[in-house]
Image: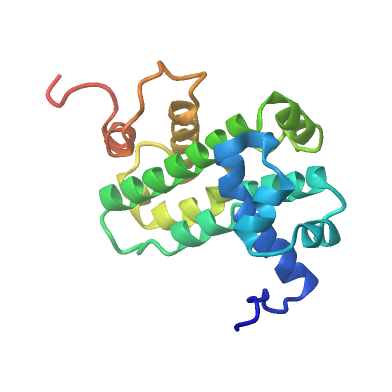
Length: 196
């Protein structure tokens, strides 16, 4: 007879991170109504372990929001883009990643619903521009192509951020899903056809 498999020993920080990673997909599926039993099952732990790691489900949801809002993964992807590539390739890669990030955040916050969204809004710094955390990295990436831009690099990055954010927000756009490749082309070439 085999003994039941026990979860490996983890530091409290690692245990919290493990629970958060297991909870984020559940929130996308069930919203804030996800149960601690579902969370424990997904994380492969006892339900009581959830409450040893977090004071209550609200604290766990806050930690999930913080994880989803954390820009580190996006910064790493953008920083990993080869600056020697042509401008067009770099812009398309940046737009694709940022568009995906905004979509991920929107889907998560929509799944949570207005109550948890409002709770998060109270602790959020609204002075930071949308996707502002990536501005410096994108500026460095585009700097070698400054001579090809009609505006300063910083302005180009602002326009890029604003367009990506706006087209990824369902309540701002027309409702049709925007294509990141088409958006990248638009950012590079504008709305007029060549020769017009």
